[in-house]
Length: 380
Image (cartoon, helix red, strand yellow):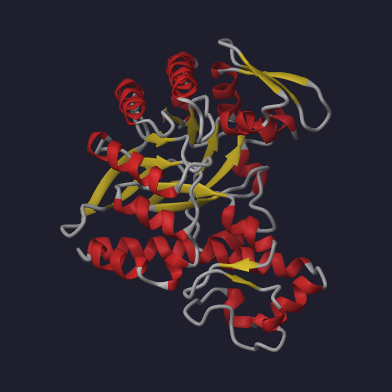
């Protein structure tokens, strides 16, 4: 069956080897490298779909685990899928629920069948298996469906990591078979497999080698940014880069700090996601061209300058640091909403700057300048 997805490399930087591309999906084209805001429960927290578009978001991510619990994939399917349910007409990627299950260590039991877990909401028991994870994502109507995997902690032993890789590969075969047996591709959907291996080079290579036969449209790298030092994450990406497929998007899961985004782009990554920009925004922290700032600090009480003079988002054009400090001090919702808007805009703009530098064969210059700046070092 013809796959209704396409990835085209538009330019490879002669300075650095970083690349730009266009990932075409049934819900629109995506310029890569790209950051994906996370809409865990079919909503990017506090943001409307129009605000996400105004912030130049091209694709968002939603969460299988949370949506299967509430409102249930059957309800979303009745609504016509996630796009109609949440009023978002651009591409959507759903994660498989594997990471959420990993984080519920006291509420779940992993077996070869899948993961049995108790809902954090009402204690009801569920089974999430490779087959059900793929089925739920298909019912949600995602453009990109993720294979079910096992993620382990960043400091896991070699034995634990090896067992997780082997189980992930067995689950990948079942995810793949279920996806194609049920002809989900006919619903304009595609499956991304996930490379695991923790911080062990040989396991990363082993996982990638055995995952590649299942990568038809894209490939993801999981199990990083889960507690290991950032230099170790970059080391794993350096190991994988030469063997990653050229003709499809490469997705680094769970990454959203500005420094790590640029480090990932340098290493050939095309797609990123993270809850970070909206999570820290709700706590009063903003990304800026001078690094992260905490707007709750008393020093901003009479600071009537914009949030970031180099930003053109609605929040920066209309409000001051003093106003934001006031909003957070009195716990007004608008503060978290507007800083979320700004942070998403900031990361989308950062990716646009990276794409421009790549297309001009100047990404290494951009990388070196960025790495020496407050933008990079105040986020580490």
